[in-house]
Length: 117
Image (cartoon, rainbow, N blue to C red):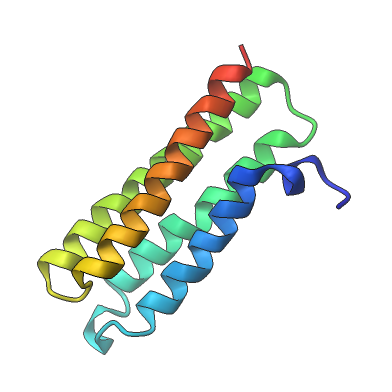
């Protein structure tokens, strides 16, 4: 692994989340393609790039700023999960699993940001 971010477990988990969200959205109704599907995928897909971009050649303050963006995107995923559950698109099992995954990513990202000083 050539880049610092590739060794970050939180980045690896964010990549996994992106794949899981993508797979879940394949089950969404077609009428959600440009609404919830696009929104949750964009949010999930932006977590890992923000972690990666901030980690490479940036100051700790700049890295912290990008980690903040990753946290915001994670929170957006949680909100989309609630919308999907409310619309009966996401079942309880998938909701709980993804919610837990995102919660873990948020905690890890916050801890990383706090460690920067």
